[in-house]
Image 1 (tube, helix red, strand yellow):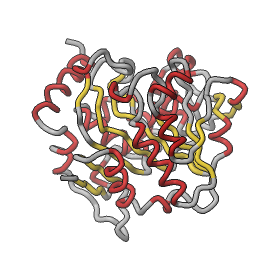
Image 2: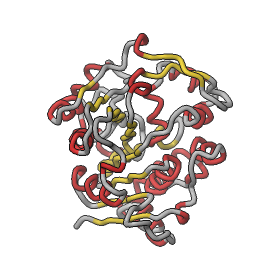
Image 3: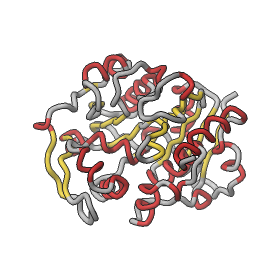
Image 4: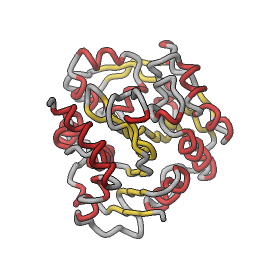
Length: 306
């Protein structure tokens, strides 16, 4: 059996017998105490998306830690696929809408949401229910399908990805909030925070043709999100990134949030049942100094909603 098949099959079996590896072995990891009741990371399980986000952001110090009065905010979920929320190919719409609301409550002047989708953009925005949720909370959805809205930038220190065309919203907003969904991916085993950033660039084909994992890590040389929120409410354990049937999905009811994108991805990888060091782009990003996979070096708030 190929390793990728083993991981996906093992995850499906493991989650059926327990909530997830993250809240098993992960719970036994040592954790540093919080500084002033502000944790480095929050891992929440057992609730609905809105309730889990509220608990997580409180543990991190509140939304006003990240969004100041009058700032423009970019929220980047995964909206790549023309599927319904029940398929868990895109970020949960309730979560995205609530993050928009929380940003405004913290003082944001404008909140924008977009993705460079894989399927037809307007169908992705509509059928994912994300457009509806964003507008209901006062946010602005922006298409990501026009090359003229992408500006070429240099990636300082990039080993393979030395330049890229990035969406102008990334250049013209003050706060960058990354909201991927936790799911399997055929090329990288998991698709989490770092890989979700491929949705802010125009030429993703370059990544796939020129060392995908290194390109994913290289992009962090240009800009890292200010806040990463991984949606694990429903997890796709295999046949990602779209899934084939309900059998590919697990109602995990979990969420991870933090500022260190490498650490957040590492924690979510444990939730998936894999080892962070086995995921090439996570290992490379840590080697490049973009964060840590040593979760014991962080203060982590573990929260269970009953």
